[in-house]
Length: 286
Ligand SMILES: NC(=O)c1ccc[n+]([C@@H]2O[C@H](COP(=O)([O-])OP(=O)(O)OC[C@H]3O[C@@H](n4cnc5c(N)ncnc54)[C@H](OP(=O)(O)O)[C@@H]3O)[C@@H](O)[C@H]2O)c1
Image (cartoon, rainbow, N blue to C red):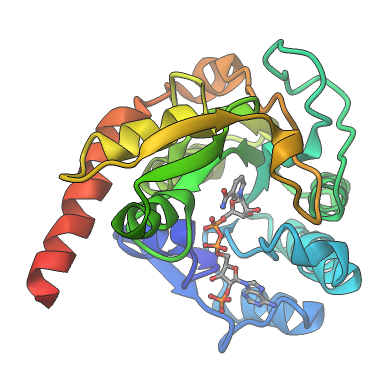
């Protein structure tokens, strides 16, 4: 059995849908309590652990910095120590936001992070805690997660499209939308491969293809809607937020393909699936 944390999140829901996964939510394992999470791993004795729980409120992390650090760094480090003691693999999900966003080259796993917001700092601290725990541990960095579940850009755009004829959307942050389903599949494939092999630990980048901007992603979403607002492309400086966002979130994903045979999926195909699911849910609700 593979134990997953983060049941009620986007990736957690996708993990829970897969056979052989036992996913736990905040009620069963609160990441504000590192000892309780370690105790859950010790008690359940899984074959591997995937951590998809995180403090993901990027702007709130600027003020709730201590909580973000506990959930994103301290507890994952303790979880990894429990996995080390049991001799089981640990896959920890992280983010493109560990990078500064400078330049336009796709970030490699060997590049040094330089986060520009508190969320990114907490996630980078988590990566280091996990990798220093002495476990057979992998950090899976991904970007711009979307799904039919929870809060994400796709659902925000669908909501705004109902009430707006025009929208101003940032066009100078570049990255790759990646479906929660694809991330769950990748994390599971990694965990299963690591169960049979002890030398696959380390950092891996995984994002879908092709890279685009938020405005480009929005236009792809609107292409599925009967009524599409006109998109006005704006620079990040015209859309101020409490936390700064990196401009360049491109991830070089060659290492995960080489080590695990996992290829970058096409986000446009995954978006079509998510849009169909959301439209069906709307039809069912009316
Ligand atoms: N979302 C993105 O665009 C994005 C981009 C790059 C990387 N990532 C990374 O991908 C992973 C999965 O993200 P996601 O989009 O699936 O996130 P999400 O939908 O926001 O889900 C995060 C989950 O973590 C849980 N959580 C937060 N604090 C917790 C606590 N104290 N105890 C237990 N559970 C707690 C939340 O529980 P509740 O439901 O109870 O609040 C939520 O279910 C995270 O590591 C994230 O950093 C995300």
